Image (tube, helix red, strand yellow):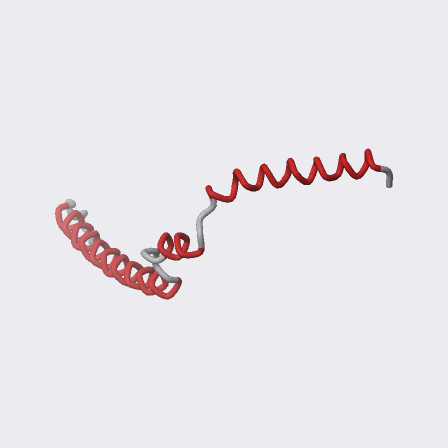
Length: 85
């Protein structure tokens, strides 16, 4: 390697290090990341919440089915009966 090539490599390294020095202060530390994710739900908490919501929705759907059935029976009771029924 000649001197010009070595100088070019060193300049390239220096330019890249300068870019890194500008970026590094903007990156989050481990502690900042830990604090950022701390309030988030865990997989287990999300799973439990999903199960709770599923049970609640099942209850609501069953309740709606009951109401619809009552409505159907009421509408059927209002229909005029044909002879022979």
